[in-house]
Length: 221
Image (cartoon, rainbow, N blue to C red):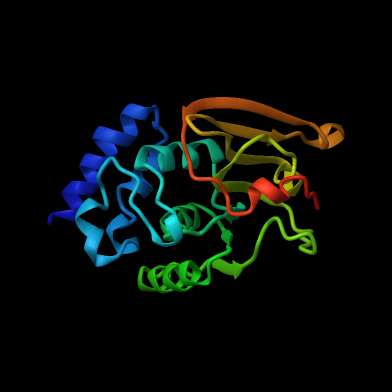
């Protein structure tokens, strides 16, 4: 299979038509090898317009949704990012290629192990992978981030993740249940408005829920 041609087709036929016009995002998604972040059995589907299944009943996002996520986060070369839900490690790789550093957490150790191997094989070293449950009541995260990507959905919006943003930080998250979900972008204010948050609904989509969100979503840092 010609993966280079498949990447080009993915960008031009799936991602760009979905209003992803940021040149950096298009370049990253056209160069980071998505096929390197899936198992051999599904490599032929790596650039298809589908949600590629992963272990534990999880799946990769549609490429077009990954593109919108990266565009909405407006990641800069000096940014420190947080990813909640490492999964295959592909979005991690894209964020790391754009940012100064990415801290990615996941509840599944095997996801972290395979992502670590794939990132190393692609010479991506500015990533910290950790096994954590974001809804664990004893978890304390004091660090703030410029951009946060939540790669699983939550049924109702909660301020849990926006608390981890730096002033002017951006959050991408999918909210809702069933077939009634929408992606949101949240931007934290700065200066005297640093405790205010601008929340915008972006587009309708569907995403598997974060593990444990149904019972632990009232938790806050």
